[in-house]
Image (tube, rainbow, N blue to C red; front, top):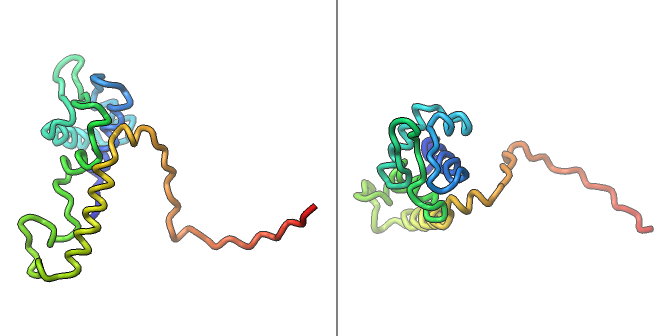
Length: 156
């Protein structure tokens, strides 16, 4: 399972609205420019978010988008599933299932456990939580080099 760019952009777009404050209407041009998201793509994403009841759309002069709920009431799971649909790690976890091994496959149980944990993390993490955290990007594993041992310091 991979969260697509649309899911990522949905979360980033809503974070932008959340930082502006409750009820603050923001034009799609601003969100697009500030978050570096193509405007037409972002407009489609925000339509999905509006259908899910996560944003309000205001047309005309002074129009734009605003959060429909408080940032603490919107989880990343809400956003991702509004755009991507239900999270399913493997076809055996989709409803209705297309997997011929459903019911007797130990691998299905493992996928279900992993999926449950991912959904749990996303459902516990709100926009308010993300606004508070500044998690540095991890270095890619391929760029990590073993460090040379440092010489022991002599006690003075």
